[in-house]
Image (cartoon, rainbow, N blue to C red):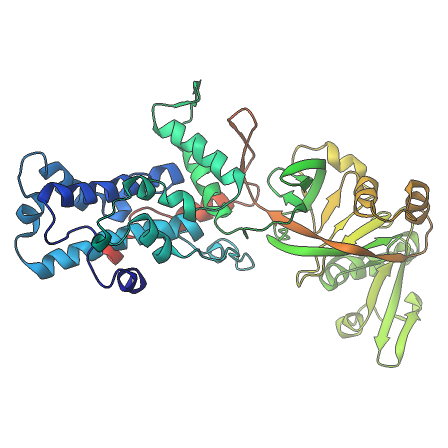
Length: 442
């Protein structure tokens, strides 16, 4: 706010001395048009002082000086109203640009990663200084387009929502959406505001509700496949990372939670469990790592078990399959193969402990090594079945984005939608309830 008026040498923008009454009403009408674009972005125009602006504009039809009728001659009141209009616009611009709520309200691990645009500067440019005598109503009409997320998916969803709000037509096609569908689109528009502007010219996108992964180049999918994601209680986190390494014939280092809750109890019940599943026990110390004989482990001593590590050797039954793809992150989540191919036939695939299992891991391996001639198809297939772990560093890191979109725009101008597998739509809807903005405006 301060920046906006400083750029204007503290001159008012919407209620200006020396301007004809109809000119002031016109300026406020231009601001009102912007506020009334809020529903096209899944927001409520009433949260941005629409009623106060509408009263001035409506009064212009029956009064020679609607601003004076509404505010009187009190210059302080006029100044406060000018600030109020600017506040409403900047609040809307900010909500369109970076969102109304924090994604941490849904999942504390989920972070907003978009850099906020220059709201004051862009609004000043769209509504130039009064001293210049310039008018830029058309620029103001398009101001929200300059601050919204840059992704074409956002623009496509916005277009679908706008069509539903404006007589249900878009390019001659009917857009029949009910209130629930419109609300779902609004929630997904908000999630695009949390995404970084730059996803990478080529990147990997894993959409959890769709149980789907796509490799995209310049926004176009060049490889896609089904995936298995984390189940309830082990939800796959929403984040981005840079794929740096591919590991053929990997060991599976059993996470502590699984080792303590599943592996150790099973080994205690069945002496042959570890051998049957090709799992070895390790003791890690400063002096090095040693293999432990299962027969010498006191399975009734929780502290002794916590001091041990379990890992599954490479092989056909390995939980990670024949290859895994690492993009270092604090959640220890990665993409990997799986021996349980039948899981990809299920419509609902929230079944893992958090990592992402791939339907076609060999296809992804070929893609990420496409610029390494020495890693041709026969060598990749041989490394996957070698039974000996081998790590290969990628020459160029590939951004990986794990996202949560329950709605996605189609090429035909409609949307695809999927179940809210983690209940995030419901949590976000509760956090994004309308009417929360007015207290800050009044």
